[in-house]
Length: 319
Image 1: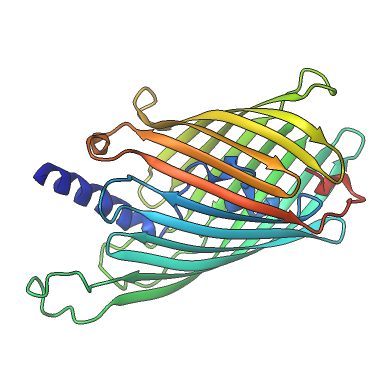
Image 2: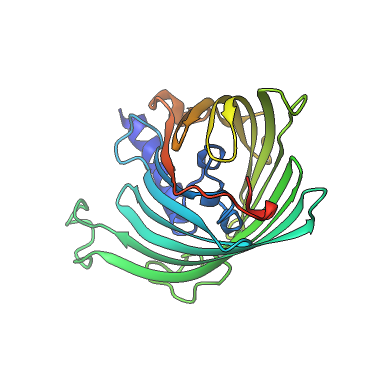
């Protein structure tokens, strides 16, 4: 039990030091929810797309990180889109709540060859709070109230699509923070960089089977940490047209720290389905570090609906 407490405290402390930097990203983006990592996806699709997501890390460990998000995006006109993301994130004695408001514009580079370039911008507002209700009152009598701060920042992104190939490059929290509210060692460089790229392959146009290998790279400027997800998805299309679609998919994800390729951080299956305007997806990651002795893993659940479908007159906003 003592070893469990030490392991949990160490891992929670590590995550808490970075919690204000960004929301934890596991496999949410693979579950028909790319907008959660990049504003450039706002407005790609002929509907109002709404997705709710629940991420629970290290199940079985008290006060482990837990995150909920609600996102929605919609097309504006024929070449633009907007979206919003709300989130609530708790990690031990720390928590954060906030929102992102995003805008994207989509350009057609070659209509005959399906080449598109998209630009995205997000405004972020974040409230970070330390809850002292469960602190030992004898540990530090000078701490008499909760500590909180509100931060404002921006994300920028670029998305290139060529037929079945896609590549998205994003910089999150591009402004430095000029306040040290909690400690002199508090990081003020909040920038994180994301690269998400992949390819959707069909043996022939009439095939019902689609294969999608993809890679998601994260780099945190504050401490130089970086990680990579290698994903593979198989999608079976049961029905698809301009107004309605139905498919089932399953896949596997492999995450590793970039200096430890052969030592996975986590590995797990994932899957989901879309029927008409309803979507549901789930993924599970097995943990491959010292916490695995005490936790049953990490779970990600996504549910959503597509509303008010309408056919676009521009290929640049078609999925």
